[in-house]
Amino acid sequence: MNITSLISRRTVVVASTLVAATVGVLPAAAFAAPEAPGITAVAQDEASPSAVLASTPWKTTDALDQNGNRVPLDNPAVSNFVGWAYFKADGTFTMYNLNDTPKMHGDWTVAPDGSSRWIAAKNDAGAVLFTRVVPIIQLDKHAFTYRVTPNAADPSVYYDIVHTPTNHAEPGTDDRGPGANGTQGNQGEGGYHHNNGNQH
Image (cartoon, rainbow, N blue to C red; front, side, top):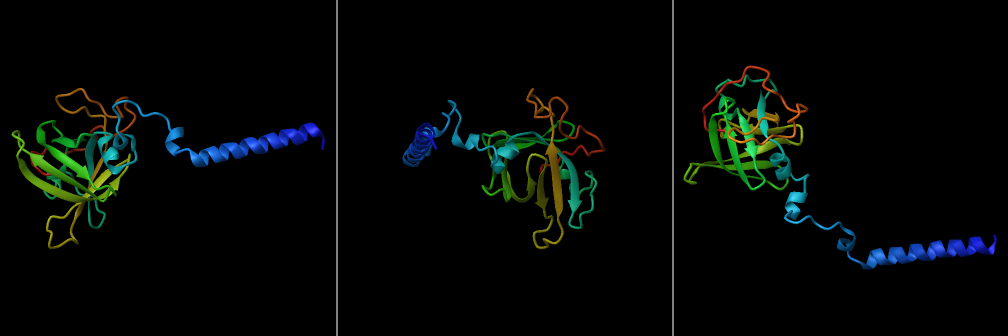
């Protein structure tokens, strides 16, 4: 081994040791990218269940009973849960029937672990009409599925209401979802019930 390679190896070892010591001493924030103005830490957590639900408009595309059998969306057991849903990052929501008529609006939250969704439907004056908590079966970029139990005394009978992302603009706005270029979502195939119920 010659003297030049020995010096080079010592330099690399000393430099590596200094970098490791610096990383151990400085807080992690010193290495983080600066936050963009106006963006909160919650908004940056794109993987949170709330962020996933607010990331796209949703369309009811399927319903399954407790045996996994498909239930037509115009079946009275599930028809009140059919429509377009828009969950905004500010904690408000609007829902419409599939014919774009208003269904309900109000406030929403999702449990931090993604296990349930809560809504409070409100009238135009802001008074709460009803609240509902439903267990979430699936919530990811592909589907939002929650469970409804018609009779709380008999949880063995239930329906899973399946929603998929859509690019359907919220009626009365020009907001478009992530499939605005036709790359995602079920664009209205199938016969769907145009329901005027106030459940979702």
